[in-house]
Image 1 (cartoon, rainbow, N blue to C red):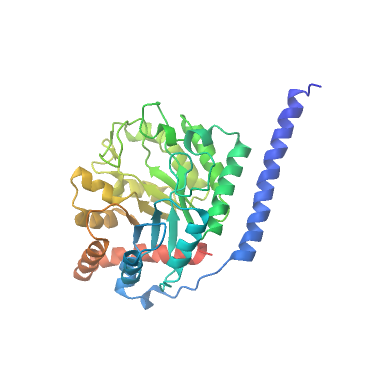
Image 2 (cartoon, rainbow, N blue to C red):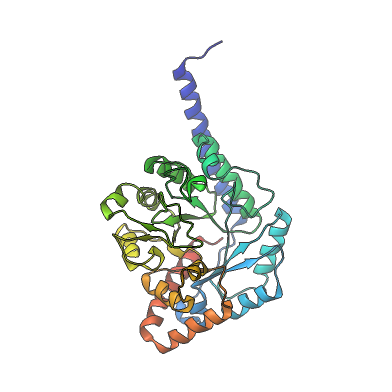
Length: 361
């Protein structure tokens, strides 16, 4: 028996609406049953060491918490950690439990890169990622994102750096396989679905202002993209601006140089941060791993200061050749020497602590 096309289309729409309603209801139950509201005191009660520490997100390797990583968390009071390496669900649960047992005065972001597909940290997650995920119908795409984040939330993770706002462009571009689609509006649609279907997870979109069609891997070399602002706003910017309109929590700033908009990489560019402010973005910004810039000859200590002054709230450091505690001590020392820098750091710390009070459960 053949069904009319209108009947089939209506059935698909109703199925998608059912999924959205189901996710909304179960999210509320999850929040009611599993929330652990944090108590944050006014920032003037925290020490300078704690205020400076809040800006750092340290990459730490698993599958178990090493004494070195535990010591780093204890000594620097970071804003959070990014879990690297591979984990089973059981290992991830134990890892996050060990991190929380350190009990810093300000609760931590516990983040992970779990896009699915080629970028994954959780062995048990067999779901799709990138291009394969983007090719799914909206309902299946939504359910896949939802299940992944629920699994991570149950394992103690509260931030997933998984939403790809980059436009795929051509198949030979670096980001193509990890991107959801090839046009601004297709990617924007998937981004909106990813935000709405992320359960209680703190959402992160990357890599603003967009990799575009560059074939250069920004982990090893800074891509230079020759688009003027008008063309960029008509193409690569659309998924990110759409994410802002739909309540994205955190925007990751990439090490990408749009030469006709700013002379420095976006992660170190006040111009690009100003663009986000002008779009009324009121979440947090985080750099891509600043250790990546060492391959391009950047002095990482000076780069940290430049990233702070550019407007980044959070500084991700995962692959540095310099000991993280040395980097932290350098920024702390510079902050005690410069009232202007300390005021800037205080502003970022205010943003972070207020965000945590509102969003960490």
